[in-house]
Image 1 (spheres, protein in one colour):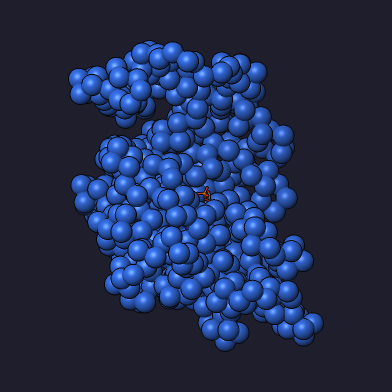
Image 2 (cartoon, helix red, strand yellow):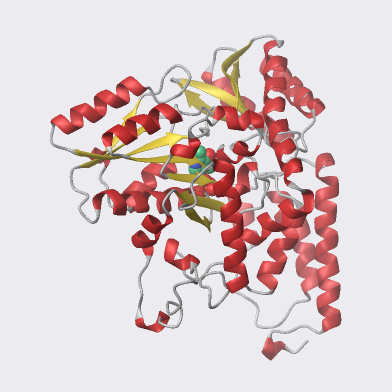
Length: 462
Ligand SMILES: Cc1ncc(COP(=O)(O)O)c(C=O)c1O
């Protein structure tokens, strides 16, 4: 090993690569038979990785062995077929290889000059998404780290387009089911809490049009400046989709920007079930859509689309002198002009490579399966003693509870984690603690669901 150059010999690289690939193949091949993962104790894990870096080299095979025994088992496997918590991350092997390639070639995907083919491929994949969603040709977008960054990017575009730099007295509207990344993005953008209107959702956890209309009217009468509505295209809690067409009508009448947070649900637009649920999505001004959720990509792979890409560019583009060579040719698109990252990795590659490899039909079927599994889970839960459905299967999420005791639901989460066979998490719906199953992983079988519910029923009864 020639340490000074941080290099391995070709043979060493190959041997280490094979070792890593073997480990990954084992992970993908055997995850179903392994526990859903584990949460380590802070005092143990922090101590294990404490200490200064070594001056001397260590055999990387030894280090990989350490990762195998100490790191990977002490995480939850969000791609496991019985991981139903939060929003699962059912990645795929092709995209894993794409990440290795993007990282190995260290593709710079910030400018056309630095990464022209990468920029062209990103534009092509954004073009796919644009057409899936029915956006016009003026639309554009960007790959970002995830839904939080997508919401931030979209809301900055909305602010720039509607308010310029004058944000005082501007107000923004969303339901109480909206993901907290929206509120955090608004705070990052400098909005004060008094400028948010968090509207109580209806019995189906959707944004009620009447309350929204009244809130906008009251704010206008008070001399405030409504500028944006954030709609949900699949909430994290229950999969609820806000009335997108009605919201688009209202926003057009009122001159408001309509952003849809589809970080969880928007990818479902590629299948018939999703297209029906998401009617009206083609009319929003901006959209967050996370391929690292329901499009089966590994983290970090979020995406933001804006109906008029020029608005996104005018919100973000700056032209410092040291970038003059980048901006000389206007026919070239620089992804860095559309968001907050300059140096950025080649996220589009994993989407491109996996969709080309498996074909879009396989993705469509995999998403449809998520809908069906949640419906299966709901019917199974309805047959169980002492189980109440709190939100029926919607966009691959079903919420329920065993018994009538909030503390029992939390206890069930802990017992499931300790047991290790399957994992799910709890939330609060209209003041009561609920359990939820999010079934977007196409590796999940009906038997996985039955066995998971069996365990919940047994734990609930003791
Ligand atoms: C609806 C919704 N929006 C935004 C986010 C945030 O996405 P990320 O975790 O990728 O930042 C999530 C995450 O679950 C989500 O479900």
